Image (tube, rainbow, N blue to C red; front, top):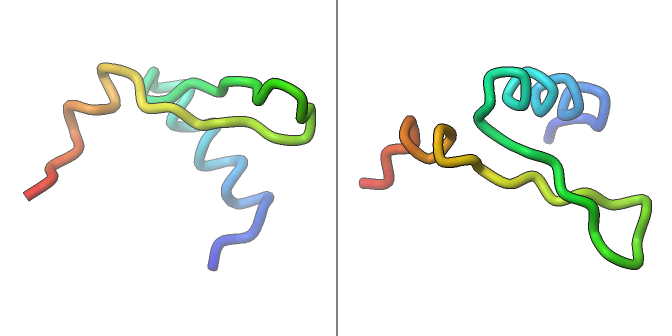
Length: 47
């Protein structure tokens, strides 16, 4: 299992590379959805 601080830094790196975006969850300011961008979908190989 990955801890919250480690996950935050990984998502930060992915966002800096334009692979993911953070989207607010309506009604819950504590929560964010992490969404793959078009650029983030390309490296994913779903065999």
